Length: 336
Image (cartoon, rainbow, N blue to C red; front, side, top):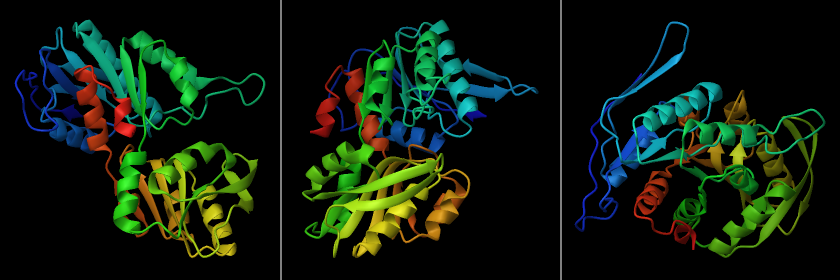
């Protein structure tokens, strides 16, 4: 497995939008978890990818070689820790270690999808908090800061003792909703569970729509049952909003409950399309009019072929955040 391209120094004069400027050199390094997204970020920044190599020995040990000078430079490592989670996680850690030992000035782990984020607390006795363990591993590997997108739980930022920027896909989703829904007079933003109310309220505020909540009872992991719909959805176009879709059960049940309560249609906007097991088939057979996910996780062929699943890119958002980080400018202003 290879990631090939050239690096580029930062320009000190004014340039077109998207081009990083300043005195320090910036390099973009990509692992193999989501090369199309990394390439799109690189294109937005007008910085070719740093040349390097990631390969595996016969026993599947990962070997990394950075084939360009990175001494004293600002390096951004783009790598989602999605399926296969452990392989992609180790690849990220080894890339960071290689850059640290090559005397990079600053290393930022750009993780569009942060694996293990759902293990952010102890659900019972004698269980781990794996999200904290992952944070420790990234720090010890040598990362100086982390850039991620729509963390499952915002408090995961506190697991790190290095600066951590949690971006939000809401601006990208808002733009897509405006393009595809037109007027939002009959639109209701719906949280598929009580825990997602803050996220739903933020999106509803952006598009000027009311919110509703699906009161969900989960009988066992991976299965859910929608019991009640809180809010007025009759005669409305409903938009379900969440950070992760895994099995798809929650979304499918929520869509069915909304339609039973008089909704005209139910669509969904989700940041991270994990879509494990038979999730794609389940969603295609469901009453969801459409499921919109970002490319934080590399879409599978099944996702690409699904008629009611659509992928929107967050490359511009992440590219802009990288550019502002390199310039020491505000990142939070992207969302206001």
